Amino acid sequence: MVWRAYDVRLSRVVAVKFANPAAALTFQDRDEMLKRFQQEAGVAARFTNTGVASVYDVGEELPHSYLVMELVQGSTLDELMEECGPLELSVAASIIVPICAVLAAAHRAGIVHRDLKPSNVMVSEQGHTKVLDFGIARVEGAAVDTRLTRTGRNPGSPGYMSPEQYEGRQVTGKSDLYALGCLLYEMLAGRPVFLQDDEFALRHMHTTVIPDALGGLREGLPGAVLDLVDRLLAKEPADRPASADEVNKILRVYLPANGDDPPDDYVFPDPTRPFRLPFAPEDVPLTGPRVELPGIVSRTYRPRADAKDLHHEVRRLLGTEPAKAVNLLRERLPDLAEQYGLRAHEVLDLRFDLADSLLVQSDREAARDIYTAIRQDTVGVDGLEMYVTRAEEGIVRCG
Image (cartoon, rainbow, N blue to C red; front, side, top):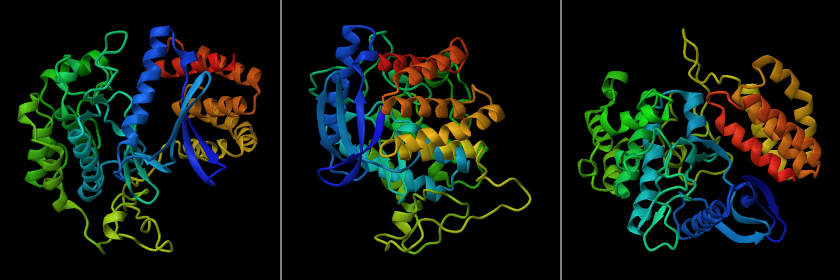
């Protein structure tokens, strides 16, 4: 769990990430969790690349280990794609090229990320792309080998894992390039490589099925980009590009130039900004004017935007004004729950926000009641398994 916090010594806002060993089922789980957490801190601290959040401190406040790091305010790539739909090539290149720089540095250092996915990529409000969560990275010479989880599952996220990850074969930097191909395909097509939620079906597709041709889903893309996507998504590592640097070189020609206009469609945060307006003064707007597309629903339409905006506002308040967050949620959550339903993802996020805010204020009983209610509403419901786990972890934290 990550919290917004304030560093009183250095007078700055930071992010504090906690490992919660109390949520582990066994001592073996606890040991693995803590080792992975320490590995994430060590890996992130080795980077001087601006594409990785800076690590400020790591320590332990029993029973919790914690990591203090740069607070990156912005949107994750999955949020950006949900709000904007298929991205312009210049926007996609502005995200992928910085990721390539991070991966190239990681691979040279013997580090394979292994969990590159939209929720682990963030675009800051200033437009800078950051790669998050090196917790299950493979590190040459590391004391902990996270090749397999305790249950025997390969580490990674379904839908973005390479064939060799699914099959338990050797994982290399080219495994990250496959995931990079999944990201690029999804950004340009406006949909994942394979339209499937079932984990076993995804395994079969990523290991044996050729994806729908990107050119058939999105007209007007350059042949070099279509060829690059095909190579990145090759089933065999040897058929993929040689390195992240090679991908970088191919996509660089599609980056916006200094002084170019902003994207035709409204995008915020705007990943093209660092390329269009390098070192721009603070009074230059972070994004261009919003453009409505005539005759059709704007691609910038945000489903359930009111709930999502409330969630972001509450998370902003949580580190400094939890009481205000509680009052805001108690005022608005009932109407949103009635409008969208108690099991809507956005409403569940807000219910967790309320429980988390109460827990910060040491109102453990009220927080436990909300976590328990969430568990009762989600247990046994397909697609909501992660909420059950999260609710159970919350109940444990309440003591």
